Image 1 (cartoon, chains in turn cyan, green, yellow, brown):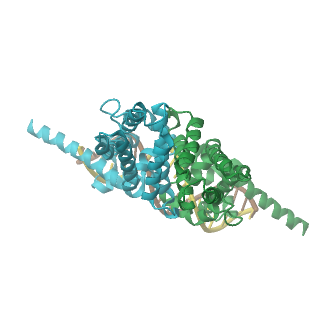
Image 2 (spheres, chains in turn purple, yellow, red, cyan):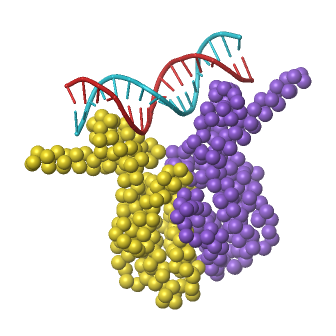
Image 3 (tube, helix red, strand yellow):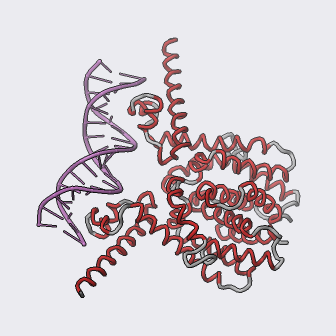
Length: 207
Length: 207
DNA sequence: GTCTATAGGCTGATAGAC
DNA sequence: GTCTATCAGCCTATAGAC
């Protein structure tokens, strides 16, 4: 039975190795540059071997996307601990922006795919926005909850929290996405535009 | 010589037909789904014939991107005519958003490409942002000029116009890009979030 | 479990007949 | 100018030997 266990572990190890290799390739060449051959080459196995661990490339990609969302949530977690919702909102904004610039390939993978791929991945997205550990702990849930508190406290205008949260998300998404695409053409320092956006959010939605 | 002229015109016609066909394919399948074979099939010519009019696929794509920027400028032109800079800024925002939702494939083509393609296209972007007809008439120039007027008039805070304009662009870009990628997962009505963003811009940058 | 080999498809681009 | 035919390369996925 010991040998069976070892075999199981080795199989799990290879699976993890494959995902790791895939992540590295995505960092370098983007999701569109990820091929089964490149993964196989990276772990020094034959291409066909991958299909013993993943039924198809799509399934492997779905796993990468899921991990990408978890990574985002990990960036946001420290900010989510802050008690004061005003401070917390600012911290969430900075953390989100930091995720975008520190992990541009991950950001692209989860948020900037062409429509067909996006559509294929859409059914897993609620679980990620709302969080895999229950409602409200996922990335979007953290933001929405904070906005709701600010509205309840009277700091923010009486608008639906979801609407405000999605609008704020959009603003930050735009700044990050622009960096991911036209970085060398942007004239403004990234930190400056993020700071302006976060201050702007408070001014824009203040009661 | 008359026949030479006719031949020239036919050649020009085919060139235009090829670009038209390419545009249609991009609308349906995105830039990544654009292939020489599909273009050839659409105009009922052999694939190799395209290479008599374009040296490579990349050159054809560059032409499409250039056209995309011109299309954006055309969307913004009516708004750019408005005398009052406050009204003009709002109109520019709505027009930009309308361009994004009415021409999602064009939007993707010019603003949401993976880094390698974006980098390859980067050198033509200044000519488009600043406008092909001279400084300040291009898409970004229209926005920047309007912001500069609002600052000069004392309506907006004393910040560099470029910085404010890029930040505003980012906000709108985020809302449009989110629609282009996660449309079916967004809970807020698009018009509502655009309106909130444009009001928010005024509140955020008001002196 | 892992290999080699390959099927069957797509791609951009080119050579040479007409 | 336009065609047919094709090169050379990539891709996902599978079949069958070991």
